[in-house]
Image 1 (cartoon, one colour):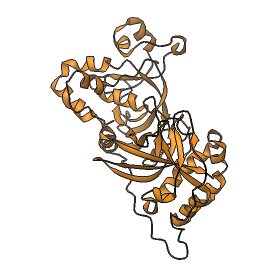
Image 2 (image 1 turned 90 degrees about the vertical axis):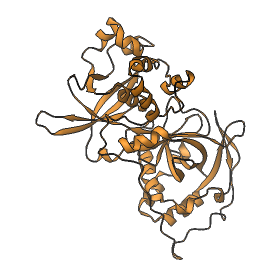
Image 3 (image 1 turned 30 degrees about the vertical axis):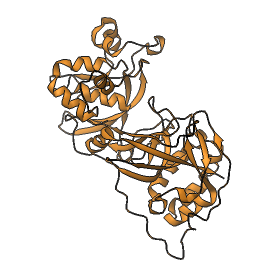
Image 4 (image 1 turned 180 degrees about the horizontal axis):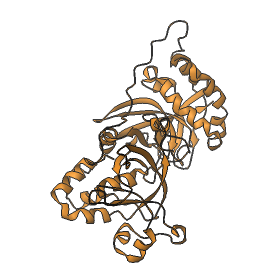
Length: 374
């Protein structure tokens, strides 16, 4: 989802550019993609079925820079206990191959893994790709005329009331406001940017210190009010108010209808709460922790429906549309309330304004292949 104009444009991390893999030499050339035999039978999961196919069906595999995907794969192996046993058993070899060449990594994959085309239980192999990102917002520790929108830590007693107060309740009911008193982690300038951060589930804030320096930290997901999520874009579309329900389109509508901003915000009753985490120089090169418990890798991590595939699964992803052309190896490391179905993925594109612009517009057809141990 695209951050608004209040989001600082600096320190953006869009999907990394990927140079083509080096051409294999006779000494280390991998076997042709058509040579590996198809093994295995159809695997059925709660919301998907996997159909074994030939490696030649994975268009673009010989051009992908697997080293970048390997970094994300290694992170999943740091939490091998969360992975399916057949995948976890391969982790020692995945680690050993982290310094191998791309052709060597590709040849190992063909030897040890079998590609399966992911389909719905009804046999549909095409689905939907969207994207998400980590917003970066300027913030203040104290409220002011500029920074007046609070981002909250979970209130005391959150677990004792399910569902908790709605977004509108928090703005209007004295008892809800009393429960939130003293729980603000930081204050940002734009309520729509705050909503975008809540929808993404995590983000980064840049706070100016008393000495004039700035310090970045991460706001990690810490819970919700357990109210249903309602899309503000759909709310606008259902009323015929916009034709473009991307975040740039939503912000353009708000610029023309500022008196309806509160109504738009309240149309989504769900509120996300955060915990603040330090952001070291090393951590700044990765995204937040996904549902698998590992830091996400820009351009190589996806959120999936865990009823379709387990965390830590290597996936060949193919998507072609007006925003981007993708043929690449990614790792299933996260999930989300809107990510439901067999051929459904949310692609983590990084952090900052440029990544947000892509995430806010990406919605295009998708095909997926699970790479599963033989």
